[in-house]
Length: 448
Image (cartoon, rainbow, N blue to C red; front, side, top):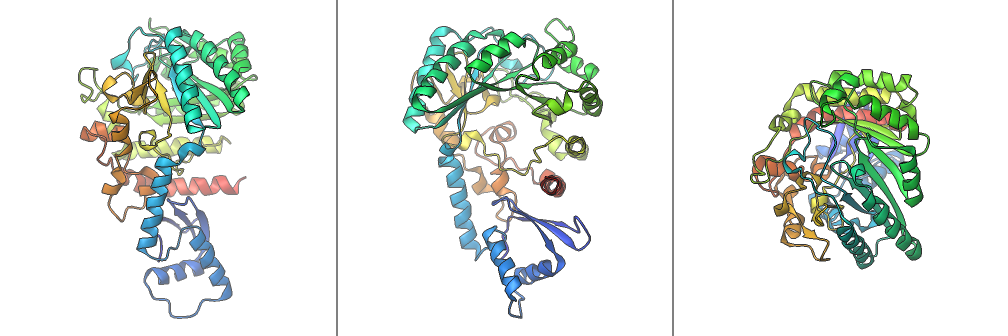
C-alpha cells in the first residue's frame, strides 16, 4: 500500500511528471505518468498484471524510500520508532546549550518576546562557575562528543565577561577530553568590534547571528535603541568590519508592515557587497509572546497566531523564499523535520542569568516553566511533563504532516489551549504551502 505520509505535486516540473515527497523519510522523487498509473493501481488494489523487471526495481526503490509500505501496522510501527528516536536518541546531535549573559538590552524592539520579563539581571562569576560545572558534568554523564554554546540575551554583548570565562574553561576541558567545542552569538549587532571578534575566535567562536528587519526605515522603526535613536547604519558598519573574519547570518522578522521593504534591503546588501558574503539570510513572521509574569496566559501580540490562517501571510512567506532563491541565496525550504526541544530527552536547553534551565526560549523568565537549575544535574517534574506531551497521538490518523510537525509547536499549544499536551494544528496552512515548498526543494536539489 502507499504510505499515508506521501505528498504529491502534479504536472511538475513538466506535464505528466510528478513530485512525490514522504514526510517521514524525507524522500523526494520525480516520477513519470506510467509509474504514477501503477501507484494509482496499487492504491486502489487494482493491479491485474505481473510487473516487469524495471517496475519491480522501481517498486523496491519506492519501498526503501518509504513511499510504499507493507500495511498499516508496519507503517504505524515505523512511525512509533521514528518518534522514539526523536525523543530518546538525539544524543547523536551536538549538546547545544543557549546561555543568557543578561536579560538587559540596549534596544527597544516593538515585538520583543522578553518584554514582559525584562529585568536588570546579568550573569555573574558565581553562576558562571555553576554553569561550567553543570555543562561538564552533564556532558560526561551523557558522553557527548560535541558541545555547542549559543550566547544570547537580552543583548549578550552587554555582558561579555561570562562569554570569555565560560568559553575558555569549556574549550580547555574539551581539548583534554577530545570533545568538539564551539560557540555562536545571537546579537542585535550594535556592540560588535573587530577586537572583540578576534578574542572570541581564539576561544572557539564559529558564527554570529544578527537581527535586521528590512531596509533602513523599516528596521529603525522596529528595532531602535532604548532612547529611540536609529540602529541600522551602525549595525551595517559593524558587519562590514568583521564579515571577512567570521561567519555572519542575518535573521529578520516581518509582519505586513515591513514585508514590502525586504527586497529593497536585499538590493542594498547586494550594492554594499555583503549579500553573498553572508553565511545565510532568512526572515520569519513575527510570533506572539506570553503575557506578564503574573499572568503568562494573557497572550500578547495574539494577532501573530493567526498568520497561519491568512492567505496573505502564506504568500509572503513563500515570496521571501523565492526572492532569496532567485538571488542565489541558499534557503531552508521548511521541509526538514524540526523536532521540538521540549519533547527531546537530549534536546537543547537554555540557561538564564539565575541558572534556571528552560527547554524553549519562548518560556524564558517564567520560573513555572523552568525544568531545573544548574545547581543540580536532575531535572524537575516539568521536564518529564514536557517529555511526555505526545501531542501527535491526538492528530487525525490520515494527516500526512504528522512526522514533520508532531502535533504542532508546544509553545503555540500553550498559547491556544493553555496546556502543552494538546495539538496546535496548522494543516490548513500546510495544505496551501507544502506543494510550493516541495517545488522549491526540488529546484534546489537539481541546481546543485
